[in-house]
Image (cartoon, rainbow, N blue to C red):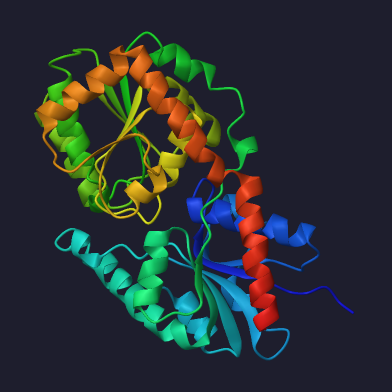
Length: 357
């Protein structure tokens, strides 16, 4: 008897992308458990051409074959799979509400609207829906999916134990304090609010810097952010790092004194998990899945009062005892996201799917 088969599908595969890393880890788990498993995608970064296959090459090995679909945006991948005799184990990473992108990127608005409509079309052939957070699972339930569950994005510790980039450390270690945010430059992340916060924080700590780590996914928005930093005479204080290699990402976490999120929509927020792991105290806007991810840790706020938040950041930077209490609780919270714990959840969910199949 041949090995069981369970392939995965995603829209785009790129190094450092949270969904791609998630799929690669699931593939390793599946193969270690005796499955034949490949990853298929629509767009594939050149660095991953030996790891990920074009989705049009996929053919089901049997009628009604179960496949894993990572859903986060509209794509031709979904249309293609719906044309085949397959069933879905859906992992839902949330589709960002299109309203954030009106007047900024109409093509992306359409793609997000398509993602929402495709979610409804997937329902009838989904044997199990898994949100990466309870917040996402509730969206699945509201869309009529059943049964559902939660499978968090795991933190693979081996990716974070590497030595930092010494040149980067040398460049920034004598400056600061350093405020960090990690995420694509997109309107729902509200990086402009971080720049405004830095403006007020520099009245308290004149040498403070803001590290914005993430690719300029929506160019008009990224250009506007740069213009805002220039207008506030902070072009040197706001570091647009772009997409960085893993070693540099680790370095920015180690350089950070505090992690601040102004994001108004997160399906989970992997950088929040990474910040907890690196003992970086978190200050975050209370929106979407952010409170769930933090699980009672960090500092949450409801109103974007930049002057008051600048004082909060300053207290966290200067008060070592308070900082230690916050990071100690964050360390407790991050354990549920570590690979062994999430793998156990995955294997329990997978047994349910195989039993139903």
